Length: 91
Image (tube, rainbow, N blue to C red; front, side, top):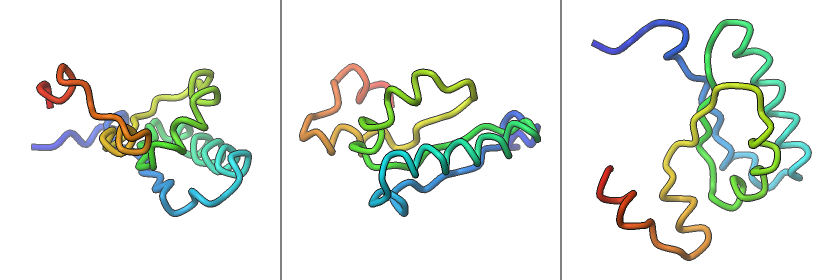
C-alpha cells in the first residue's frame, strides 16, 4: 500500500515543458512551487532534461527544501556520457 503521509507526496515539476525559459525564470517557477509545497509539507520532484539540472546546480545546492531529481538517465544522456556502472547496477 503506498504511503499517503504529506512528507511522501510530491509536487512534480515537468521542467521539460519550461526548458526553453531563461534559467532565472525557471528558478522563479521552482521557488513559487516550493513555497506552496512547504506550506503543506510536500516535497518537489523534478522531471527535467539533464542540461537544465546542470544549469540549476548552483541554485539547487543552496535550496532549503526537500526535492528529488527524477529519471537521472536524462542527465547522463544530456552530456553524452554513460551512467556509471556502479549506479546503473543498483537501479
